[in-house]
Length: 279
Image (cartoon, rainbow, N blue to C red; front, side, top):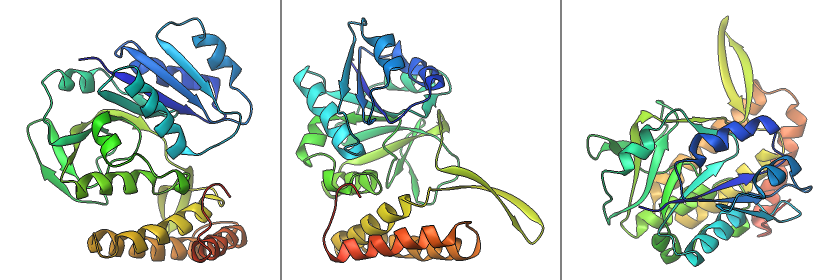
């Protein structure tokens, strides 16, 4: 089976080359989407003479949804049925995921995802000896069927970043397609900023988004609650609960509370004004 991969760059560190090389020689072609304001010359020059690689530079940050949609259209034009979507800060821990894919595919499955954590804030349902069914998958480490991407009209460009993966997975599930995740951890993925928090003299390490991300988390979260309140009430209720927990984290745990709350309030304001895209 032929597989093309895409990786989305945004002001990448040169050390992230190792992440790309963790899967580069397991795929047929690679599409690099550079969302950076200034071209990432290290990656451009490294891959420019590689016939299996296409480098797309936007000249500005158009968001993860537009980047993924661009890669999927290019992959379809090249005649591929499957695309592996990757973030710049994700790498495969070994070759196990690609070995699993050699066992064949089910027509009911839209996404085969490589698991990056053994702690899920969502439900899991056993599917077979290698995969569990899951409600959502992050946009990195996903083998995505391109005809199904086309059927649900792709990723939602206006969301720009947060909730893009949730919205896409919900659209697939409403079409009765399945999303699977590997039973074993096969992907190393970085989320947010590592933050050490002391609660009742117990040390806890967590990941927190940058303050500006709370603009997108808030605006897009409210959009998702409104859009899926009837179609998937479980999800809408979960998003509302998550939103409440996020506010409590800001108040009791985060530094720079004023900055976080400023972006949160702006996100609420733009939701009611139906203002989307990049802030």
